Length: 335
Ligand SMILES: C[S@@+](CC[C@H](N)C(=O)[O-])C[C@H]1O[C@@H](n2cnc3c(N)ncnc32)[C@H](O)[C@@H]1O
Image 1 (spheres, rainbow, N blue to C red):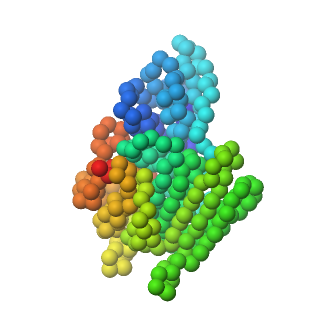
Image 2: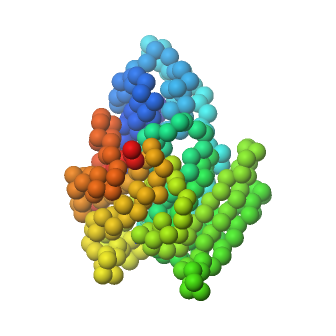
Image 3: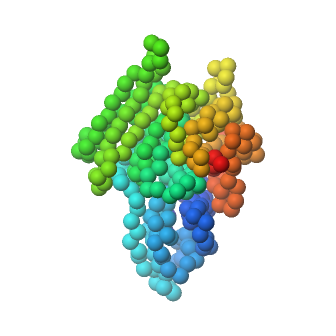
């Protein structure tokens, strides 16, 4: 596999190990054999290679959905023969790449997080899962979920982010002439305004089924109150990184004061998110390890009734983002 040149910028040069770990999770999920996946250099160009004699359906499908993929070849001694793989995408990737704003989670990384979390669900396999991003910003996870054909829901504290996402989706879907409805409505409980709610239904260009998106403005700790009895197959989110990204990603602790790490917020939010997961559902979180260690995060997850996944590839997603952020991926399942 030739990886997209941009993926090394996203992962600070660690794209090959991260995408290898992603593929390891995708292939290992069903309990089947996992071939050796390793970085290889051919004529001075870095590739990721899989030691398997043929590209069967299982491998082809996993490769086609990978986050950093550019091109696939089979190798016949010194020859590389291009292979057509068909990504499962229902929308073009510009749905998620067009928006640019401070604090946006990188699109390739988001796809990795979505892939790894959905592959970890311990439920009867199905084509379309329900996923919740309880700190969804301007919707990178939600759009990625739609591209991959899932029902998506979100919660975001910053009302302006939900409004901006709504405006973007409306323009995008109209411009692409896709059949859709999109509505923003006020949310009220006992006469009190709780924020706003975005509802979108869209028919992808090549599919005959409709996909649904819901997003509430509000605090993630109120997510269960906002969604009521609804349960999700997956909770997937890129946690705030602390003060480094400016006020947009600031975390507010119980007292309403700023908190330099996401630890306080995660301690309160994990039990809420866990309660919103179906049995066998998976939680996938990316976070800054400088503010909270994996051990402490695991402890919080266990207290919230989740089982952290710790074998092989699950511990190989750590990478540097900048001097103050070392990002990692944490996945846990609800027994
Ligand atoms: C790292 S950003 C996620 C960005 C998002 N993935 C995107 O690409 O737009 C973290 C988000 O968490 C939100 N946030 C922080 N504290 C929150 C809370 N208590 N409840 C809901 N959202 C919160 C921030 O406003 C920010 O949008």
